[in-house]
Image (tube, rainbow, N blue to C red; front, side, top):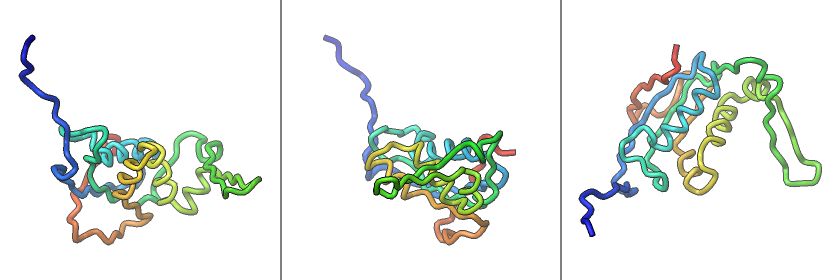
Length: 151
């Protein structure tokens, strides 16, 4: 038998260091930005990424009202919700939701890209989305983050 020389590193929750990132969504494509923010929330950009541990950073998204949808997704893509009662299925075009409540539209897109379990809900709590340029997280000194698809 040969001895193992290296061990696989597994991050522990108390060892994770978190940063605050500030993302400007003005003019960005909704789905592309949501995918990148979901990866930041999961911590996939870090060398210590561990799938079963929340290693991600806090993300503050501003100017969510400036998000755009490409093609005809604004009319054809629907967002569904159910009241829990028979016949309680509601549907709304994503474009209408983006006009009415851009923060909810972005949060919903990111939520669908995170794990659908307790860990995913814990990661989603680190996402703060605001329709305008103002945010109340100046005390955390968020670092500006430029998405890879930024213009």
